[in-house]
Structures are given as C-alpha cells and as structure tokens.
Image (cartoon, rainbow, N blue to C red; front, side, top):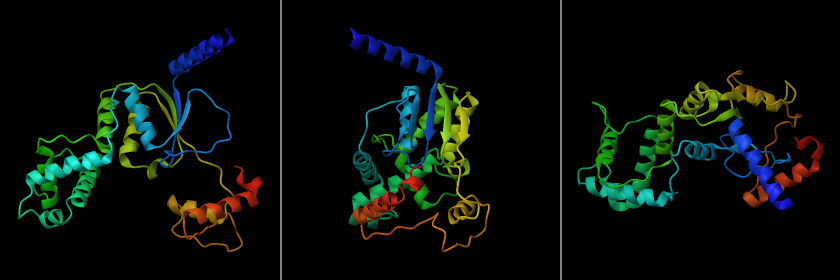
Length: 260
C-alpha cells in the first residue's frame, strides 16, 4: 500500500511538473555524463545539442528510430554510384576509396543543410555544389542526419508548435553558439520560453583565467600572463590515462578550491 501511494504521488508530481513546464540547462559539451553534487529534482534537465534535439523532437512528435551513421554513408555511397562518371571531379577518389569519399561528401552535404541549404545549386555554383545538388535528386533513400532533424524542428517551431519549456539556461554566451541553435532559441523565446545566459562568477579580474575569457569574448585584443598565477593551468599527458591521472591528482590536492 505504501509503495502504491509513493508511485501515485510521483505520478502527480510529474503531471504537475509537465503542466508547469520544463527547465533546461544547455551547454554545447553537455551531451556526455556530468558530475553533480545537487539533489535530484523534477522538471529540470541538463543536456547538450543531441539531448535538446531529442527533447524537442519528443515534444513535437518528430521522434524516429535511431539510425547508425554507417547506414547513411552506405546510402550516400549508392547515390554516388548513380552519378559517377569518368569526368566527375570526384571519380578518381571514389575509385580509390569509395567509403571515405562518400563519408566526406555526406559531411559536406550535412554541413550545408545545417547552414540552411535547400538542396539546389545556384546559377554560378561550383562543381562540388552542383554534384551535391544532383545527389539530392537521386531516388535512393537517405536517412535524416542531425542537420535534417534540426531543420524539421525549426519548421515546426516556425509553424508556432509549442514545446512547453519554461526556461533554458545557456552555459555559453549566445554569440559562441552555432547560428542554427541561436535561431532555435530565438523561436523558443517567441513562444514564451525564458532564455538566459548564465554568467558564472570568475576569479580575480586580473587573473590569467579572466584574461583568457576576456579575449574569447572580444573584450581584449591580447593578454599577458602572470607566471605566479595558477587560475589557469595546462596539464599534459602522453595519453588519456596519464592525463586523467594527472588531473585527478591535481584536483585531490586542492579539494576546497576545486569543489565549485
């Protein structure tokens, strides 16, 4: 009876939280695991680009089965076989290494789609763009990549489909985010989602760390470093295991300063 009451209370809390809206912490490098010393909370998630894309697709009913990238490369390779000829600019590379050639051209195609390309060549297009436009017309299935999924999300948001996010806290300055994500956040803001950039408190205004941050934000043209200041430290290792061990030892040596 107690267990049933517990789960009933959890369902009520989840329903209340969904009605209230979801609070999101977004960072470009937060798709992996993140250590947190905070207690668990409902209605609050921390995600990177892939995590937020999945959340948006879920709210917009755009979810689909996951497709491994190798399947897309193979599909694009079959498209290349359709348009290949001895005079094609990619013919020599494709004959020598079909897989790598298909992977590279697919990468270019996805980057163009993410930048807003509609799949057609311009009047004065380069041979590469003309080939990519021709490949878009080949009637061989190509599973949607991340860029295609983002374009689908944008199309729904432009049609004023609501996702019910209450707020999004950005861990990077908006000017450092990819243009497509800036546009998505702008569309979310138009439907009532509060978008805020978390300006984390830094150290001393004259610290090496602060100087580097100022240069990255275009507030300083260059920076000089104080060799006695350890606010910014470069740890090196011959491999990942050695670097991880060095980092762990350094963190353990100063627990009070590093527990932030």
